[in-house]
Image 1 (cartoon, helix red, strand yellow):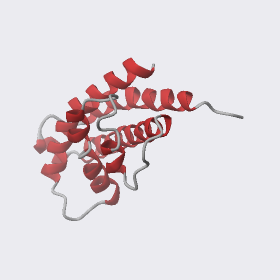
Image 2: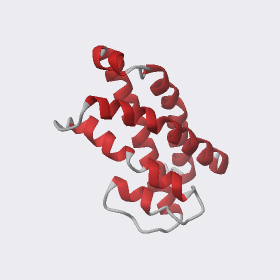
Image 3: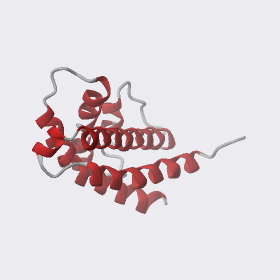
Image 4: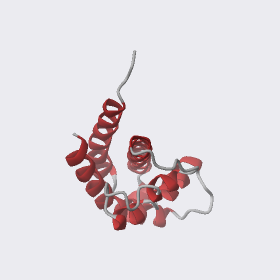
Length: 140
């Protein structure tokens, strides 16, 4: 079975469009609630990870489709798309920091502060929304 790279990209875009609303709905508005409600925090952390993982996958596919340099880190998948007329440079620079938050969540870094995680997740949602709109308009 030969799977077309565009089909994979479209499937990843669909995953973002499915998981981003779940992230928005599960992420508490207040830090106090985020801190107290383990279920909401756990759900929002998981949906955050799923959105970031799908965005990274999209980046890697776009890098391959455009014969660009393949980076060694998830962070580099954003940097390698800068200047390629796919996404605004400012968006790529801002959204790339979601990788650090994702890694802190996945690997349970001891030094990440819960308040910073909460703030970063809220800050990234509008960036994810912009990314989704741009990639959907271009490739769906």
